[in-house]
Amino acid sequence: MIGKIILLGLFLRSGLAIFQSFFGNLPDSTSDAVSFERAAWEFATAWTKGVEAASYSSAYLYSKLIAVIYYFLDRIPLIAQFLNIIMGVAVIYLVYKTIIVLFDNKKAGYIGAFIAAVYPTLNLYSVVLLRESVIIFFFALSFLFFSLWIKKGKLKNIILSVIFIFISSIFHGGMFLAGLVYLFLFCFYHPEKKKWRLFDKQLLIGVLITIIYSALFFGFFASKIPNIPIIVYEKAESIFLSYQTKREIKELKENLALQLNETSTEEFIKKIEESISLKEKEIEEKKDEVPKVTKIINKSSSVGVKGRTVYLEEREAESFFDIVWQTPVRTVYFYFAPFPWDVDNYADVVGVINSLFYLILFAFFIKTLFFLWKEDKALFWALILILLVFSGTFAWGTSNYGSAFRHKTKILFLIVIVASYSISLINWKKIKSSLHPLLQTKKK
Image 1 (cartoon, rainbow, N blue to C red):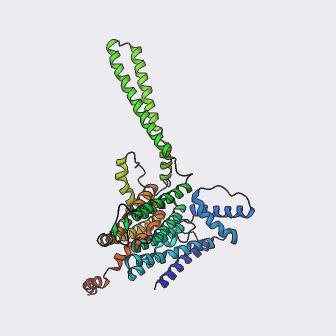
Image 2 (cartoon, rainbow, N blue to C red):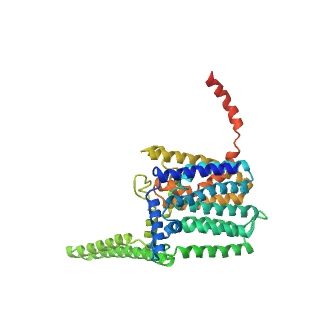
Image 3 (cartoon, rainbow, N blue to C red):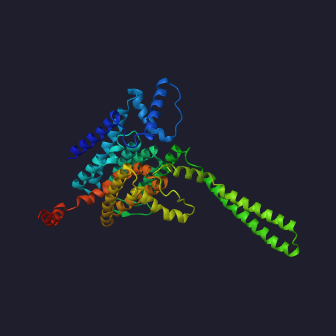
């Protein structure tokens, strides 16, 4: 059965690849996909000629992966797409295998594998030349080994899960936080005893692995990560200068009040007012001086804040309270936008249908969480934490439903895994029998 489902997924993905190569462009196959493919050919050409390749950001590591194929086989995008297809098909099996490990339910495994095989966006991003296929494959592989650890223990499983999520993180830094969730659970939960422990040797091993994992990640992204001490210093300096300027204005106003009691010459009053005006101008300038880290965060979080599909355009976090209330709102938009009232063309209709699928899957996902709360709290908390860190990261890093369409696919396999268990419990015979009288009435 699983073999047939995998073949179905292979045929669907191969059909899309052939369409993309010979008949027309698939959604999201232009812009970034074209840039990745062009960069891959530039890398391959530079390697062939033995010259230094053009400089690209770390996001173009995916292009280097394609460049290896081009280096040996020439510029054939269809073969590069085949690499994505292989990883996309592998995800179908990983979904099936993970469900068996977590729930020991073959029916749920077949359902999950079938959804992964036919789901439109999983098919799409298994074909177009974007890094999603690589990211999803290694994320799914890491979660399988994490599932093996949470059910059976063994240090090698948690190490392999961290290694594979690290590889996924290399292609997109946002995946790094999922690895920290794995390690957090490892530090405090013992699968063999099904107990939580605070202090023992496993905590020490977990801390050591966390340090290595973080050091490797931060080392790889050193050019993209700001210097934390400088950030703290700049922010503190900005706050202090703003406070100091306000205090000086207050003192000037107090002096003005005292001096006005002694003299009221127009020239003196004018000088004092000019001084206050200058100080107020300084305050405004200080407000405009944003620390480097804020500029970096604003730049990264505003990627995609343009075009027709932008949402929450006027909502910016200016305080901790704004972050608290905006995070759930942005998360809802991230997963479920566009809404029916956003429909403006046929592409929006496709987006609404995709969001509806997510809504249905989330309903079954939540239903399974209620089951896990009673039966497996470690897995429950693992899923909650992964979902929270993933949603928080990408909800703030995405500001239009065009980009969200792609980014939320990174966690779709996990939602499918969890939702499939509840879907497998549906009693279709009971539903059919309950609908039977209604059907009979319609026939009459």
